[in-house]
Length: 155
Image 1 (cartoon, rainbow, N blue to C red):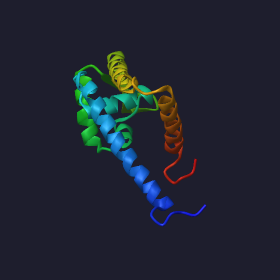
Image 2: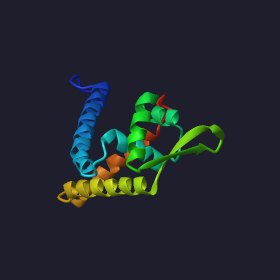
Image 3: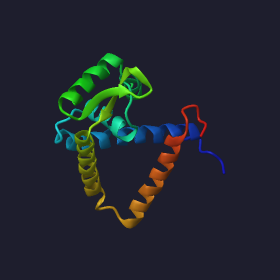
Image 4: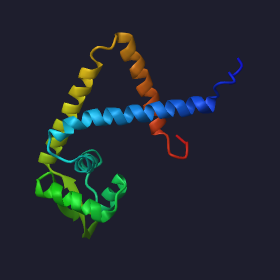
C-alpha cells in the first residue's frame, strides 16, 4: 500500500501527538474544578499523591519526583504539614535525615478528591455508546503501554 503524498507516518504521529496533548490539557482543566472543592492547591495535591501512592520520602526525593527545586518543595510540604495532610519524621535509613509521609487525613483527602474526579469524568462518558466506550478503553490500553516505556524507548 502506497503512502499518500499528502500525509506521512511522521505527520500522522505529530498530528496524533498534538491531539492527545490538547485533549489531556482540556481533561485536566475540566477535572481541576473538582480539586478546587477540596481546598488544596494543585501542586500540593500532586506532592501529596506521590506520598500516598509511592510512600514516605525525603524532601529532595519528592522535589525530584515533582520536578521542582527543594526550597519550593519545602514550602509545599510546610503548608501540607500545617494543614495536617503530611508529617515529618526520621528516615529509618539515616537518623540525620527527615522523611515526609502522608497522614491518614492526607490519604483520605486524596482519596476523596480522586473519587470526585472519577465521578465527574464518568458523567462525561455516560452518553457514549458501548462501542465508543470499548474504543476509548482500547486507546487507553495503548496509551498505558506507551507510558510504561522508558524515556529512551526501551520497555
